[in-house]
Length: 461
Ligand SMILES: Cc1ncc(COP(=O)(O)O)c(C=O)c1O
Image (spheres, rainbow, N blue to C red):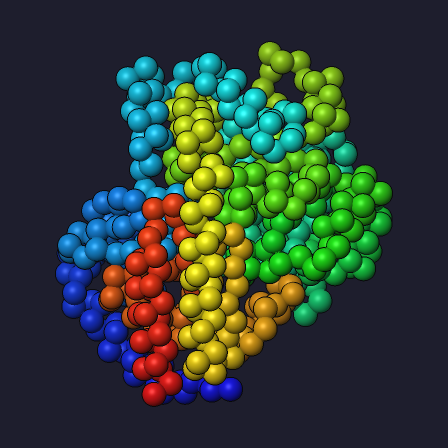
């Protein structure tokens, strides 16, 4: 197989980085100005994880395209890291929000829309009770709290390499066999994260059984397929074992569908017939408007109903959670956007993209693989897909990604992203992930395949 020399990568990277800077004077000037008042020059430091000397400043997003302040137009395959997975400002959602705005954005009282939303979530995701939060991070935090309440246990179990939001319980990793706080998580207050979390590798049923058997774990918080260190599919039978073992040891199973809504209109829970005790969805659930939802089963609902005097709040949510505007946006998104007919457009195009990337890899004889989960398609720099977080993270080490120097992206990945950005294509910043929205066309997909092939050909020439 062909291996690409570092000197080759660095040479092209230097050229592309210079072009990136030269063609974006307005973004650069805004970034410099921003640094004087905003930490890192941006309203949220996440916006700095993009490869390139500074982030592009957006003028507008329409459908699946972004325009920046310098007048460049991009085919956006990142789509707000799934928040805008169905395309920017979907008409039905935009109209619903616009309709709600003059009626009051948030009243700390329910609107009729919320009843429709509860009933639809119940029908679609097969859990009887729902609550609405502002972000998936919040929803996961609240779900963990509910699990601790109903089990009277403290510990949470997550997978090495997971991401479920900026929650200390989940910003953990396995390093040399020991559970550690994730190196990039600031200021965790615990001497040892083992006081709150047990971490195991995905797809390891023995490790799961061993971790659950002391019966001190409140919940397993799991994505159906891991997505944040690249797509990692469950082995056949893994989910059945996860369900059996969590039931056997009295642990709540929380499925976080935030990214896996790429799989179908009821997420992978719907596609694969999973039976979680609790379910969390965020980001795309309101087509990019800040909102998330979490649902729980009858038993949990009964326990909470018995425990709670309804005049009190009980430690989850916030003043703006479940606000009328977010509820209106969720309703419109469920009704008009997260529909089977949209997936019928998205999935075949995503298949076409995966085949196109597979061909580039094969023709160039590169030790890379392509993976697809519904409308989510990515390639990674190893010959075979990883089975767990440890294997996925090995890839970063072998591609010279130094977390503290490079951030989340190594030189090869950085080069590909900047090369594509210079030719009007945006990939998700910290892996090579592309989302196919219902508005993405086959011409868009072909342009991406062609441009990626040009980049690869230059690298192996
Ligand atoms: C699986 C998963 N859950 C939760 C979150 C947190 O979402 P948010 O940042 O919108 O709170 C993320 C973010 O990427 C995610 O990937």
